Amino acid sequence: MNPLLELLTRSWADILMATWQHVYLSLGSVALGALVAVPLGIWLSSRQNIARVVLSIAGTIQTIPSLAFFGFTLPVLGIGVLPAMVVLFLYSLLPILRNTYTGIREVPGELIEAGRGMGMNDRQLLFMVKLPMALPVIMAGIRISSVYIISWATIAALIGAGGLGDLIWGGMNVYDIWLILAGTIPAALLALLASFILGRLEKAVTPRGLRST
Amino acid sequence: MIKFEEVTKKYGNQEVVKNINMHVREGEFMVLIGPSGCGKTTTLKMINRLVEPTSGRILIRDQDIMDMNPVKLRREIGYVIQQIGLFPNMTIEQNVDLVPRLLKWDKERRAKRVRELLELVDMDPDLYAHRYPNELSGGQQQRIGVLRALAAEPSVILMDEPFGALDPITRENLQDELKNLQNKLHKTIVFVTHDMDEALKLADRIAIMKDGQIVQLDTPEMILRKPANEFVLEFIGKHRVAGGGPATVESVMKSNPVIIGPERGVEEALALMKHKGVNTLLVVEQDKRLVGVVTVEKLDKNRRRASTVKELVETDIPVVAAGSPAREAFNTLTANKLDYLPVVDEKKRLLGLVTKTSIVNALASFVWKEETA
Image 1 (cartoon, rainbow over the protein chains, first blue to last red):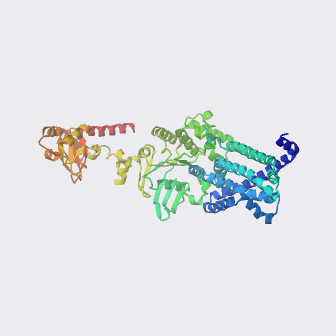
Image 2: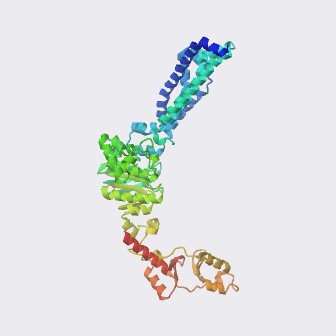
């Protein structure tokens, strides 16, 4: 019998479980990341000097090799889902933060001037003009973040967070190529699916007046 | 209505607006005009506090605007900008009723107002209200820009070169429409432009600005008749009239006669005549001092014997001074049966040329303008 089929029939429940863990691990981190990075990006968009500092810190976090990062958190947060989420959350920040910041910064000056000149206060200017205009760019940031957090979440298995990484690391330990694939393929499919769904969402939030027909 | 009292604006050490005093009356169409960097836009933006004065006071209906809430102030003042600035994420209706929405008008009143406004500029509300700005032409977009400023029925409207980015035909149409609107609505409008045609067409009064100061503030008529100084004279350029008609020689002359230097060759002079389609050339020195004239007959007859224009120039010719009355030039022309009369300044430098045609043209344009005004 085909070894892949055999594997599927034997451990489909494990694969499904691992996929589910993977989904909440990565989407949870991205959701948290967006919750922090979008407001932070908005706040930074009117504070260029602070923004430069914050964005370079976020950029530096991004350069820490993920394996090392998981290692660093080990003595502080131990193992399990929580430390994994903390690390993935930190990784997810930069693209969302940068896109929110630039998205708002790049709203055409004449729109800001028109809005202000017509008597919008800061909050109205944000919700009626800046955010609607920047939303597609912010969504793109969330999409980029999601795709690579899904792939990096496989490493989180190393600190006992579960997910599809479990199958991959397990397969590597016992030289079972099929087991590795059983982890890799769903992870790749998840990333593609997230990219597809969030891409559609990105289009949906693009104001009609800004869409190219 | 709007009073500037010794208003100055500095950016760092640079004074962009210097001690301006100006009173825009109720229902008046005031145009601020001047070359770029003269401070006209800064002056405008101080009225709705997008720019705040460094010193001095601006009063609207006797109330110091610095004592007012800027957001509230701006909602009571219409604002139109050159880049139009319609919100691309909003429909035409949402753009037009934006200020009413900020002012929390109820839905019915807003909808009624939008229809009313679109009909005011002959744009069918059913056709346009739910479109987006990018589905409209530039001219239509700026019409909406103007309507948006009118929406909440402000009594003051600020317009910052609103038609500057439009093509000439659209610009003229919108100027006409604005003029018609103003005849109906009698708003107090402050309008910035660098286009004198536009200013003359629209303004009740014009403030001509230079280097942050108002050089002259008067009606279009008075500015044309009595320009305050050389700068204003130059700025109004082709529009100038002198005391009710083409009175001086300067105002009827052609300013670009065909000239040649005395050291030039005969063949070159003949070629120039052929190229320009003239039978006489004015001979001038490097410093523009008039030496005389040279005719095609003389050049042709002597092309073997002479080599330079200098040898064939006729120096004993009648000329007329730039400041003398046009009538005098006309009399000289007819009395001596001349075709042309060079115009010189006090140092005998050539300024232009009066011909019968140029006098007739000057008269004609004066008469036509009087008729259409």
